[in-house]
Image (cartoon, rainbow, N blue to C red; front, side, top):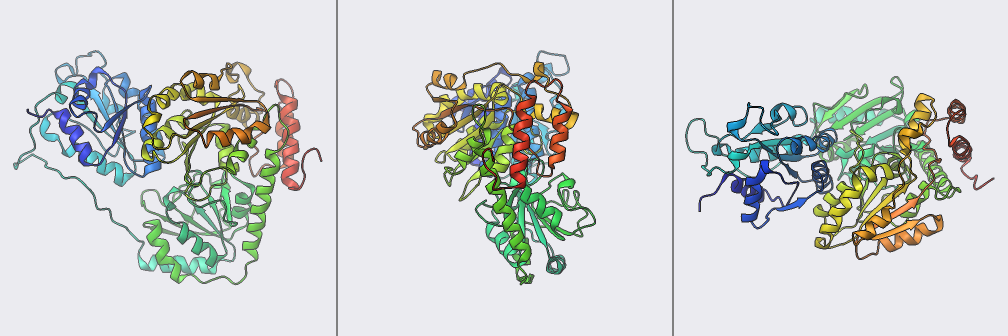
Length: 598
């Protein structure tokens, strides 16, 4: 039987080792769906509840596997729905390939139903590679290039298939003019910065007395090299948000996250250093880096397009982080004066003491930080953790202590709401033998998470390890925006936009055959995490938590906190709760030993 174009699409994906495609059906890809039937669902079609969720699941798969994620959608609205997830991939530099249907060639240009100019639509989000297949001979090159470009550029790519093309009999490209044969596979190069640049970087770092490191996701897999550099230079290391899992928080010189969601230890590291080494990070907020005339700086990054654009680096080394650090290490001199390192480690210890104190403060009814604190001491060493955008991201960044081989991610640059649950679904397909945890606010849960619990219920029995835990910060408030209004606009909470309808998330989980636990007592948290992390099926922890616990930025002074409170004294429905708790937290930050009502 002759193969159709759709059969070859799936066959080529199998050749590339693709195991799952996350998608939602529609008549624009009917030919592809029929081919899936003929292929006995290989690669597996994982049905999301919405195309945006399919894209997020592909992003989660790619983030937690390091491989290309694949998503598929029909023409018109299906294609449009993919965009937010694909922009998440683009801004966080994640390899994803979108396979999208289009109206038949005979109808194109005729304002036909669901006809959208998809080449224009995807031109920005998939700017590295977006092509339309109009004849069979374009395959398999289109599939091969979409995957290779996604891998090499760490970016989303897209192939558009008019519906009738999918059903055409496949004719391979020939040995002739204007034919483009292709091949599978890539042996990737490891690029190291040039020797002279590495030597100059070593000289600069050796000259520094107070060296700080900033590491991001581009330094993943470099723990040994970063540790040796930090030891030689007596340095501390702050982590960009997407690099939270690059170094374990059990190392005493790792100061944690940097930025608005960062730690005081990271802020002090940057404000006190005279030399900065940035590895694999494009952290955008310059105000959290050393003042521009304070530090000499070196950056290592694999991309010449992205290097040197956030800070006036004296040297920009283009190369693989691991290879370049390995070349750098023999040229570094061990610093005998360890006073800077001792100061860093003292600040780190103070920070964790402060965080522990904050988490145990009384709240009405549950302190959201305690959710994360109780999890932190119980995190399996092979856990995969995703946080959603919102206040959950604050506590993820500051309160969770990663160790072992824990992996973590969130929507770092787009900071879109709603990827938390689909991320961990994608992660479970990447590593079905590892536990996964999603930490989400109730706004994100209502936006996307509840529907994707249906996807979890549909597929969880296929995973070797059934543990997938969703912890919902249930405060009936779009809390991050509420705090941003208070802090940035000096405006009280606008309840009509911020207050959420009350939903029983645990009850919904139970209705799907999952475990659902309602928690309104902080002493229930530890046992609930224990049960969820040893459970025989996915679990939703529905935690009633206090919306008045403020996510205080690391650089905020007590005076600034009081000023923000004063700005909203008139008109905010929660004004006394957050003023009282915010002032108490700031006092505990200044005097780390202060506890309870002292």
